[in-house]
Length: 288
Image (tube, rainbow, N blue to C red):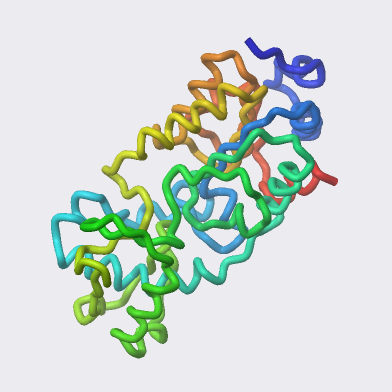
């Protein structure tokens, strides 16, 4: 069973600790090395990508696409791709923020065992991180449900652009899933394209609601956490079991868990302590 360093143990009674004390404790935990990171949508909000449940959350307005709906309805796929094609321009142009850069720097310093991200925006890698497990996949890839071929999203973007001239000029507000709101059912005139290899249905290479994360990927994440000295959660409410299970796993092993997030999370009872503060500023302070 792992034992937290003294700089953290002295903060185990944190009900009355001030944020400065918690930041110092977090710094001590990271300095000891062997830290696994679990990141969520809250880490990318400072890059202009909204989340579902945090201060910028759009859960009340954005209805996420489910795997069952996507695979069961051509109209649903048309609606999805019409909105996703519009939203992709925002994702593709997004830049890593101070939080992503700080995590990449911690990896460069050898203080991390790896990064598990629930995000599908690729911003950890854009910031320079290399040991990244994309738990829910990536919007930068497309997978054919027929032949299984994976292709770059940029290639599909060019094909959809050619099939739908003028679509990029439509207004659209970005959703957490990387698609966009469209006015007046404009998606009804959107032209969907299929796999160039077999003519099959194309799907973004991400895990939709109602779809299971591949078991091998889950096992890799469990192994990463097991081999770490601590788990730090960045910007996740942990409302979905997909990510929360790793917090439970760490707690079961006796590993210290620290959560940095705006607002309460499902994992707070499992945490050694929490830090309720902006991620970019907090993480930048840690590496300074």
